[in-house]
Length: 580
Ligand code: C2E
Ligand code: MG
Ligand code: MG
Image 1 (tube, protein in one colour):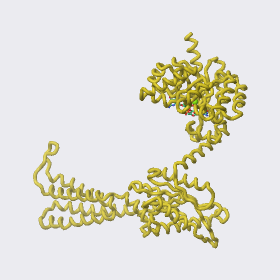
Image 2: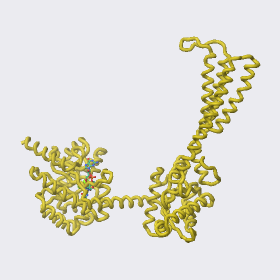
Image 3: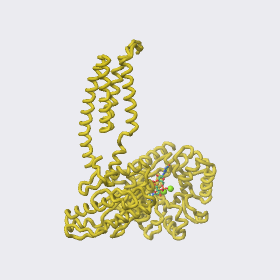
Image 4: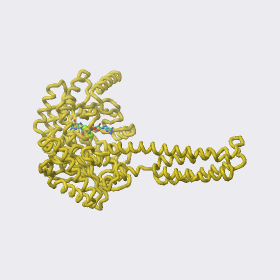
């Protein structure tokens, strides 16, 4: 394509662009079609007689022009699709017809062939014009493409070119490694020695690595490109094992670490290398690139010197966790964590209360699920602040609806770790004291794990919560392994059956029996039981039959903003008033 040189990288780029050329089968098809149309042109030109065409008798010779035009279209398509080869073949085909036409006109006296003679000359002119103008366009296209795939400073292929190569490797089902490389301390070279020297360093590194890639001295086929700034990309293919990949990366590392002299300055460079494998890690280019970058960022965190790291899923989890942690800290700082309220009903669809569920928005306005941010908050010790933020705002809500005298309950989730902190009771008490709320209307939801992990201390803490007048709910019940004796000694008020068991009820009878058993145990222990995640009317029917007390689920209400919840309280109050 662009530049035909003897080196590996340019050859690879050539190969990529050639793979997009028209297939050879199209050439054969065009030739065949041309042959048939020429044969039919000659046959119809000399044929006598007529054919019935849509009710009219038409001379065979009337079709001669049609087949001749079809032949010309084949010739023009050959030139457009196969350029030089197509043009030469077209010339041969057209020129070869002249002797036949000459014989036809001057020897056999067939004057009708004169029109074919002129049409051949015209078509010769036309394909020549098409070919030469098309060549100009192609040359221009090539130069634009060359600019699009080349990095201006170093002359290496750029990120776009390496993506094209990867696309091609994926198309051919080839396994490859993508290595993201970042020079260490390049910023200080720029800052202390100036950008000119910085540029020369980048050019020299590119030259060395390009030479290595083209030397074919590694056991792999390598393609080096410049990404941005001091970042390079290396695509390694045709290796027998991952060991070969590591060896190749090592070769690039060694090449880089050799002394570099620029404008009389001796420099010793190092870099970090993060790599991922395609299709092992992913078969999507954006993802493998992202994974290689994630491995690079991870290895950069561990200090200076040359280091190599292969991508693993753990790296991604760490990256995502760090990102979420940053977002939680910002949201707490700006007090943008808020909550939604999901209604809970008794079996006759009368409002029992609401569960407050924490909500956090991403920069683009989408929600980050609490399933993602609560575990991170628990790990980083930020969950106390989230719990308290939701608790405080939920109390504002309870306070605001106190005028309706609705009697609704308000459940708030509290992480076990938070509950166990010494200042928990004091924090909660302070908030309650500054609001006009009745503690009996507040329910603290804690997960079942509390009974297993820290039973003794937890019991004390729960007693303190209860002494303030608040209620206790055991959340996600059934997912842990708490024993009956724990449950018996636990002064809770409500069991919340986890959605997983409600889902399973639809599938088999034994799950129905299991849920029925939890409800019975709850009742024996004098607890109320609520089913979480109820999504269908059929589930409600079953739950009614097996004696469930309350329902919380999308079937009767999704989590909603406090304004809508307030509206629901008002409507519920009106309905109650008309019922009496
Ligand atoms: P959870 O306490 O068990 O809350 C119930 C979850 O089930 C909520 O998810 C709710 O939206 C969802 N849900 C309820 N009904 C249905 C249903 O019919 N279908 C489906 N598919 N889902 C339903 P959400 O809001 O994503 O909360 C997830 C978990 O995050 C909560 O589970 C809770 O463990 C935790 N969480 C939420 N807010 C807080 C908080 O303020 N503090 C703490 N520590 N944890 C919280
Ligand atoms: Mg809950
Ligand atoms: Mg739950």
